Amino acid sequence: MAEKSFKYVIIGGGVSAGYAAREFCKQGVKPGELAIISKEAVAPYERPALSKAYLFPEGTARLPGFHVCVGSGGERLLPEWYKEKGIELILSTEIVKADLAAKTLVSAAGEIFKYHILIIATGSTVIKLTDFGVQGADAKNILYLREIDDADKLVEAIKGKKNGKAVIVGGGYIGLELSAALRINNIDVTMVYPEPWCMPRLFTAGIAAFYEGYYANKGVKIVKGTVAVGFNADSNGEVKEVKLKDGRVLEADIVVVGVGGRPLTTLFKGQVEEEKGGIKTDAFFKTSISDVYAVGDVATFPMKLYNDIRRVEHVDHARKSAEQAVKAIKSNEEGKTIDVYDYLPFFYSRSFDLSWQFYGDNVGDAVLFGDNDPASPKPKFGSYWIKDGKVVGVFLEGGTPDENKAIAKVARVQPPVENLDVLTKEGLSFACKI
Ligand code: FDA
Ligand code: NAD
Image 1 (cartoon, rainbow, N blue to C red):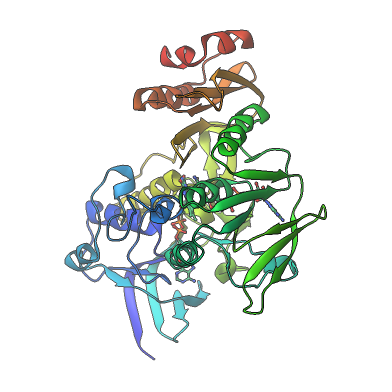
Image 2: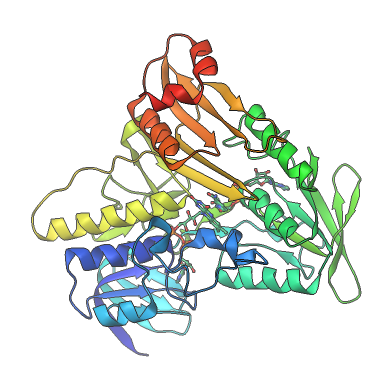
C-alpha cells in the first residue's frame, strides 16, 4: 500500500484543522510539508452553521459559503487555497489506526501516513440512543447532527415531511437550536428533556424560563422531566411514535436527538495521557507524547484564569487552541518561546430572533437583570455569576457588539462586588462602566 510522509499532519478536518492551516501559513510552511486528513468529504468549514442557516428555508447557507475562517471574520479558505499553499487536503479518509510510537497513521483503505509532528483535531462524536440500547432507536428518520452529511439527511427529512411532526430529544445546544430550525420550517415541534429546565449546564432557572416561554410563544411544545425510552416505526421502518418514560406517547415523523457529545480519543487510548475525558495537554497543547499535540474538543488543557484543567466543546476555543498549538510548534523550531494559553471561556448561540453570549465561569451566586419577559418586543436581559465577592461570569441575551465586548471585559477583569443588589439594580450598566 502507498505510504506518504509529511513534516506535519493534522488528523481531523474540522474547525481547528482549518484554523491551524491558516496559522501554519502565517508562520511559514513549505509546499508538501503539511497534510490534513479528514473523514469528511469537504474542506474545513464553520461547524456552527449546520444547526442554524444550513437548515433555514430562506437565506440558506451552503458550501462553499461557510468554509473557515469566515466565522471569525477571516479569509474564506476554499479547497483551491490549500492547493495554492501546497497543503495536502486528504478528504474522505478515515484514520482507523494510530501508532504514536512509530509515528504512523493507517486509513480505512490501508494507506499509511508518516509524520514528524502530529496535531490531533478529531473533535467529538454524538452520543446515540442506540449506545444505551433504547428500543427501536435504529428506526429511519431518527437523526443526529455533527457533520455535513448528517445535516443533509436533516434537510432531506424536512423536505420529505412537510408540515409534519418532530420530536427533539435533549434540551441542550442541539435541542434548542434544532427545535427553532425545524419550527421555522413549519414543522410541529415537541422538545423532551429530563431536567427541570433547558440547558442546565449553563442556564439558571431564571434564564431558562425566558427561553422556554419564548419557544412556547413560537409554538414549540416542551415536555420536561422525562426521557424517550422507545420508538415505534411503520412498515417502512420509519419512526412514527416516541414512547416516554412517564407513559406518554408522542407522534413523530422526524426525531432529532441531541443528548451530548463524546470527544473522539479512541484511536489514541493507552498511548497518551488522558484527563476529564480528553487528551491531557500543557498550555501549548502538547500532549504527554513528544511531537504530538491535541486541540479543540479533544484537548483537556490548563485554564490559567481559574487555575484548573478543563475541556471546552465550543468553536472559539477550537480556533484559538489550534492557533496556539501551531505558534508553539513553529516557535519551538526556532528556539523561541511564546506566552501560555490564557483562555477566557466564550460560548454563544442563536435561534429564532434571539442571540446570546456568555463569557467566563458560571459558578457561585447568580443574579438576573434586565427585561426577561418572553413577550417583550426587544428582550434584553442577562445574568452575573459572583464567586468570592467577584464577578466571574456574565450572560447576555440581545446585546449589541459593544455590550458583548463589555461583558467579556467584566469576565476577564473580575471586578469585586460587595452587594449583589447593586448588580440587580444597575444591570447591564454595571458591565458597561468597567
Ligand atoms: P470538529 O468536530 O470541528 O472537527 C473534527 C474533524 O475530525 C471532523 O471533520 C471529523 O470528520 C474528523 N475526524 C474525526 N475522527 C477522524 C478520523 N479517525 N479520521 C479522519 N478524520 C476524523 N460552538 C459554539 O461555540 N457555537 C455554536 O454556535 C456552535 N454550534 C455548533 C453546531 C453543531 C451542529 C455542532 C456539532 C457543534 C457546534 N458548536 C458550536 C461546537 C463547535 O462546532 C465545536 O466545538 C468545534 O467544531 C470543535 O472543533 P474541532 O476541530 O475540535 O472538531
Ligand atoms: P449538550 O450537552 O448541550 O446537551 C445534552 C442534553 O441532552 C442535556 O441537557 C439533556 O437535556 C439531554 N439528555 C441527556 N440524556 C438524555 C436522554 N436520555 N433523553 C433526553 N434528553 C437527554 O449536548 P448537545 O446539545 O447534544 O450538543 C452536542 C455538542 O455540540 C456539544 O459539544 C455542544 O457543545 C456542541 N454544540 C454547541 C453549540 C453552541 O455552542 N451553540 C450548538 C450546537 C452544538
